[in-house]
Each structure stands twice: as C-alpha cells, then as structure tokens.
Length: 216
Image (cartoon, rainbow, N blue to C red; front, top):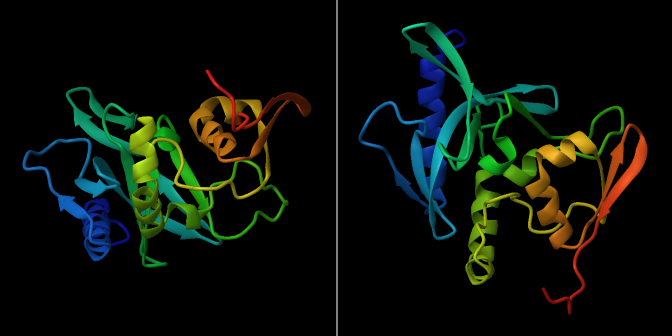
C-alpha cells in the first residue's frame, strides 16, 4: 500500500464512510465520476461534499495533504481545494485508526495541514490545529448540538471551526495566520476568546466578543 496512492485513497474513503455510518450519519456516493468530492455526508442538517484523504502519522503530528493531481493535455496539474468545490476534507490515519473532518473554511487554499496530538516541543500554542478537535465523531456531535442555534442565526455549524468553545481564554496569532483564517478566529472570539494579533513580533490588533446586550 506504501506505493499505491489509489489504494490508499480507496481505503481512506471506505474508512470515513464506515465511521460516518457508525455515527448514524447519512452517507451518499456520487454516481458520476471526476467530482472534486468523494462522499456526501449528512451532518448537522446539511449535506456536505467531502474529499477523502489518506493521512500520515509522523511523531505526534497527523499530516494531511490538501492537494490533488489531475492529468490534462498539458501533463499533470497539481491543484488545491476551494469552498466552491467541497465543503470539508475527510482524512483517515491508518496508524491511529481514526477519521478526521476539516471544514473547507480552514483548509481552502492550503497545500497541507498538520493536526497535533501533543504540544509542540518549542512551546508554541497559537495557531495550532489539535487533532482531537477535528475527529469525525467530535465534529458531528458538535454540529448536531449547534444545529438549532446555527439555523436560528442563519450560519453554517461547520463553516469555520469545529470547536464549540475556545481552547484558551486568550489566543495569540500572527497577522498572516489571522488573515488566512479570519473565519476561525472570528468564531473563537464569538464564543468568548480574546484574539490578540501580532505583526513582526509586536502587538497589532485585538478581537473581542461583543457585549451580550450589543445591538447592530
């Protein structure tokens, strides 16, 4: 399996479909070929187009490739995924026997993503993606809990982040990361976190949750 990407892709797709079925989610398969997504999963009252990926475990990090190669008349073309093509990236790590679901708002435009199982050795905590947050079961459970609230305010329960509450009261992030994942940090602030943005090592901006009685 080590040198057969097609087999790995098939195994990942089947593993994600099986895990979704165990979670009592709707699992649909496109009838036509050459779609940018492999499965359609029913989560939180929505049907989500999911591209399935084989993830590799390296130490305490699950590495997920977010690119694809397609053969054209001009040769192979490597591309990334966008929100117009898929709603989420599904990843299966065979070493851990675990499935993950990454909202496209976080994965869009990226070539790869690292899901951490343990803190970084250098002590970095800001802008890290924790594997536990993206487990398929955890995301599905969260989406169902948030479904009523999300429908009431007209938002997507999987749009920006799978985390219902911020992992920390304060999040420190660089300006580049903040710009690329604004939706994620906006949701974190909405759930009560203080997001502090730095630029070139200096404090640059601060994002706070709105006051409970604030009106637009």
